[in-house]
Image (cartoon, rainbow, N blue to C red; front, top):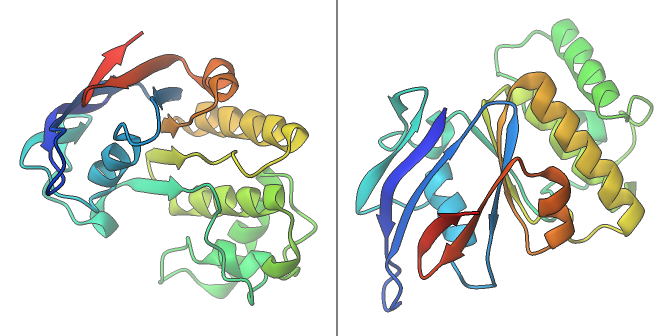
Length: 212
């Protein structure tokens, strides 16, 4: 179980005091909805460790993640425009998710398997600058596979995609979450993304999360 318990934060000069509490099950997608400026990205930044709460905890299976630095947390983050190094190949971008001690032969096998799992087995040598938006999101997911982290945070990951590609990537996220038992947290403005993917949904109202 992934849980936030009264995770309190207030931006300097901002009137809203956030107090986040929620729970998420492994192998499921939990959606966070709400209008622009309601605090969705603030919640993800707190979970990832980019912001420090004034009080409260984030726990995973009873382990408190709150004191850990971002790189120590078992969390991956996929953004609206996945950050790829455009001058590197798809395979080299995926390789950034590997532990540094991974041997060359093992790395090549793992990269190929990850790209194959997201349906990109044929583009490992293709430069990231030549990829479509949907392909870039798939490369980001392949890199997430190699990081092998229990929590996946999705911050408007489908917004820049056309309708057909969005459906394809949504299906892929759903399948990977179930297959690997991830705790996937989706932030989206789009009601269809939430309706298609979420097993439980929270809405941000006046700085707090309400389950509905």
